[in-house]
Image (cartoon, rainbow, N blue to C red):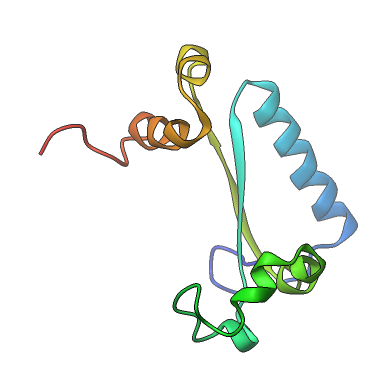
Length: 110
């Protein structure tokens, strides 16, 4: 896990329980929760550029997911408030746009 000062510490059981407790609190308040992490050592994906990259085949094969998504550095969780009417009236693709709008990350006019 990466701390605010940039240092890395392992997630022990006490920390894991606290994170899960906070996640439950946030989701219990109706927030859509997203966790963020990154990977320092990308291996053969370090120069990944498009679906014609040699390693792209691994992204299409679920048996490789656990190795690709291992050794991640946890950064944090964010809770997003999405109104129910937006969730019901738009499909999953448009829902991401609504999240960006509700967080003021996307402007509707230029």
